[in-house]
Image (cartoon, rainbow, N blue to C red; front, top):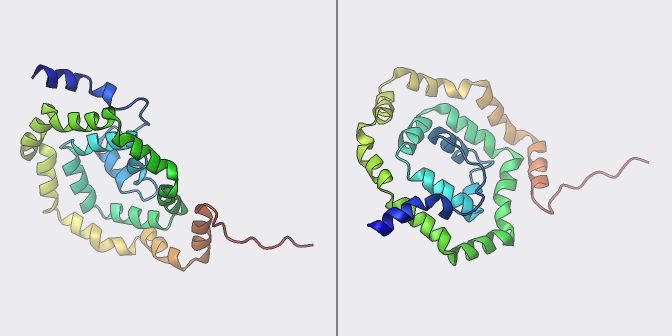
Length: 195
């Protein structure tokens, strides 16, 4: 038991040196996970993955994800993000061999898997999950399903100007040119300069 307590006390040190800035709330994590321009960042670097894993162990994520799922704005933001050239750049970074090298090195780094195991064995997380059904945020998420305005929002969503713009984006040829420009080595051909 002493070893487990000392291991839990060392968690910040084990979470790998200099982790990048991360969202501080469950809602912030959900916004990042549902944004196609940055949702792959957790899988590009083991340091980011440790932070993402820690966030997913938090019971507050369940009501935050449930509320986001019931909000039509989340779907609109995801669809708008899919037509953003930054989305193509977000996923094309997986072609970088450095990403594979980082993950191979993490597989041999005891700090990486110790940090993940420590999150799973943390008694605070286990207690949080046992108390989750009595959490007011969880009750609020359940009550949202009986809120008539939620259904009204979903019925009105296709007529919102943001949704109209999103539906028109695939018809814009410039969208595809800018996506090709986001891929390394795939910039669209430029017209020759006028003489």
